[in-house]
Length: 390
Image 1 (cartoon, rainbow, N blue to C red):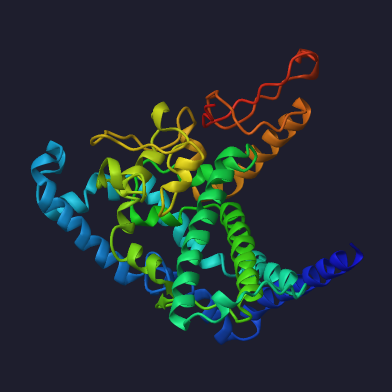
Image 2: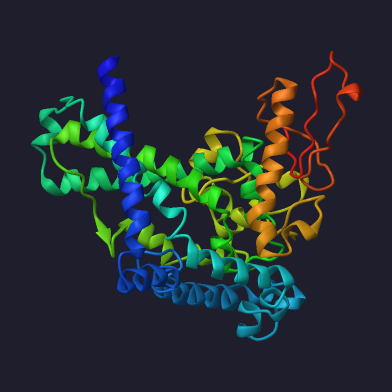
């Protein structure tokens, strides 16, 4: 036990030192500062970014194909030209979209200076800690198999593990009451555009980064123990080949008004853009559905899969909240901390860590109930801005 604690302490110390180095690095020179500053805008250029230029162009072509294939079935408002269908003025100039542009523009400039270093070494920390035990799990069938067989196995396991980590962190952000206010920033978008995918609070990204790091680090350490080799997988432009295929096909339609469903059978295997749009819906029947990223199997296993039978009219946003809460960049950054704190205090007073709530309250602000008004024999009801149906 003492050995494990010692390794944990050393690893945490290494992570802390690495974080300090990452924080300091942008200020070592003017060139380093400019290079760090440019990493923000690069998310719309880099081939390793889900919104890289190549994938945005591919998304446009996919949207174009959807228009010409389904234009006779489109609602009346979308039966104009292809460009007016893909880039409707009412969506891209909507006040919510304007907030998107401001928030994302500012956030991409500061994230690599402030909070990115906090999660940058999580995966490495887990890998180093687990790998330090030097457990030999190797078996001949895997070790002696052909290189490309091992490469295929690692690639498949890698995309499955990554996809589950995305699903699970998303699930936690919805289910843990004091984390929801941070993820609520993303759901508060009243219209969806490809920019909306970056409308994430820093704490939201931190939770995702930690879960990804733990899952990825554990997978890497397990592979090393089994094979005795460093981790490698089949990649294109630094991305798992399956992730690359997703980005260059339909990914950009997830955050858009363009309905594309895979049908009742394939939607039980892969998460379609339509299913993710349903996840953003304020309709009660859509609440807490379709957390998945690529594969729908995780939603099916956790009982939260929703497969549309036909096109559905969807209104995006968060139900029963004050729109002013999400109207400015400072509010998007700082108000979630206050909401989360009040929710956490209410949970502590209630002596309850229940993850499911089924009430919708006006805004995310928890009512401050005087102690004299609280019935000691009844648990305190935590009213939320986003229903968590049982």
